[in-house]
Image (cartoon, rainbow, N blue to C red):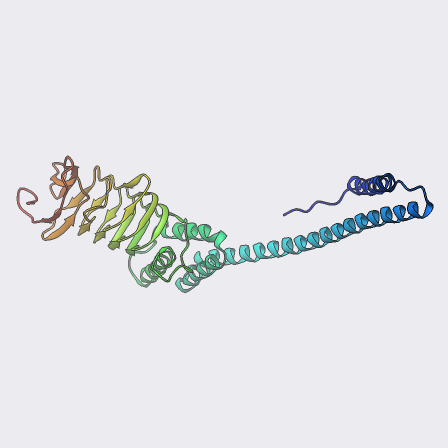
Length: 322
């Protein structure tokens, strides 16, 4: 925010304008009156002087209003700078907490970032980017108390993201609109994204452990699940993939799958593990086919437009029995 200074040239223009106003008004009044008497001329001069004084008063009021406006803008600039400095300090402190080697401190960092984003909408995408970057970082330990604590921190970060991207009735104040997600390569456990809405997202090469529930979610532009791996339930029932749609090319499914009857997605090169009694519902136009390169898996191929319904896979020596 910038304010301009009143220049000497502008002041001179105002002064010349007032002089011209006085001269023009005096001449016009004398011509209109047409009476040569001194009293009449004196009244005309008084009227002209009143007009000039009124113009000067108007100019004075304008200058006063401008001075007040400049003072208000200066106060706003100072408040804006102070707010930005405070936000930067809070953001830096929360980021430091997120990088701590102690799980409770990292948890505090997650909640501090949540409060920061809730109170300052212009920084929400930055906070989401930081939380996504944290979830994309590799897990250092797989076993032991440290691993359990890290899973707790990551689970909390997932819950925070979903809570502010969910469009449930009555959560308008908590909803963060127009968000972009980058969880490519992330390890996500019990990922629950139902009824959430984002502009676009990428889960390419992500690893979903446990259920991955996207039911009733909305992706406004596009979403990328290329080479993602689902070890448990993959629920995409009634998901809306807008824009360019959803790309599941090369994805792998090991548990139950539910795309529903109307969900559309691209599954070129995707595969599913052969398992007894596992129920899978693929998007319309896609069916399972035994793969020669992996006898323990089936691949997804286009069915020539034939809608695909629920499929229960039973193990057999020759492959899946559909």
